[in-house]
Image (cartoon, rainbow, N blue to C red; front, side, top):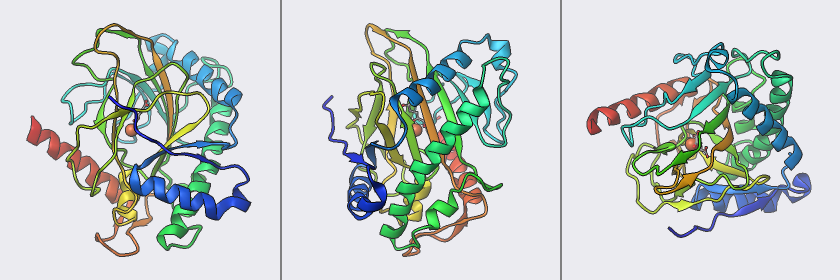
Amino acid sequence: MAERFVPSISLKDFDNRKDEIKTQLLEAAEYAGFFTLVDHGISVEEIERQFAISRAFFALPQEVKGKTPHDTTTNNGWEYKAQHRPSTGTYDQKESLWLMRHSQWPSDEDVPNFREATEAFMAKCAIISNQVLACFSSALGFDETYLKEANDPTKEDCMSQLRLIHYPAAEDAAGTWRAGTHTDIGCLTLLFQRDGEDGLEICPGRESHTSFAMGDTFSPLPAKTGPIVVNIGDMLMAWSDDRLKSNFHRVRAKDVGKSPSRYSIAYFNQGRRNFLVQGPNKKYPAVTVGEYFKQAVDRNFNRQAITA
Ligand SMILES: O=C(O)CCC(=O)C(=O)O
Ligand SMILES: [Fe+2]
């Protein structure tokens, strides 16, 4: 499986290089839907610190992690091998902790400094997201601040989440999926990976945000500590009249032999519930972010019914 070219974009000196960065982001988002960001303002040490916090959480006994249980109505909390994928018909081989600003959090007694450090990390993710969203906003013909406002995590109705993910070590994993093929439902995902913990595969080429068709040319995107992998989600694809691509991706362990455990951290910009999603050319009827989410879940459910 050949590696595909994934553009690497530097955010260095953002204010002075905004036009150049905007051009690079737009090209990457229209073509592949995936790119990596470097010089983004979060150091390797800060990323490693957040991964250490994540490892400390997942190393806790099940009953302690279970004090922050997954709630299917809010999608916050800890889940263990509970995510069923319509694309594979199987459960992902992973555990994860979903966090939102006002969700339930693990206690600092169980993981020292968990909340303060993680909220600071989320705030940094929001700053980087805002730079990217400002570029997409003006490139699409919106006011520069529009998509930033629409994803402002300090607002009560914001649905953005951080997800800490742990894929346990595996052996001879043929027939199983660490994360089955999917697109992300929200606007923009920032993904952190660690050196040597490969497994992410991407599949550019989606035409419409409502389409479930997926090609078969997946390419590995090697894991590196430092660069942030960014992808467009379905909601931003809709918001751009399908101009920015939300593409399929998945995570797998080696079919044969040992795969080390993999940790990843994803920051999902998922919009503010009461904002309207509609592109400048009004290709689709306007829906609220809240309604868009519901429809996306229904689409997934229907697909599950068809493939079952
Ligand atoms: O762990 C990864 O690299 C991918 C996670 C992912 O795609 C997701 O949570 O939506
Ligand atoms: Fe994803």
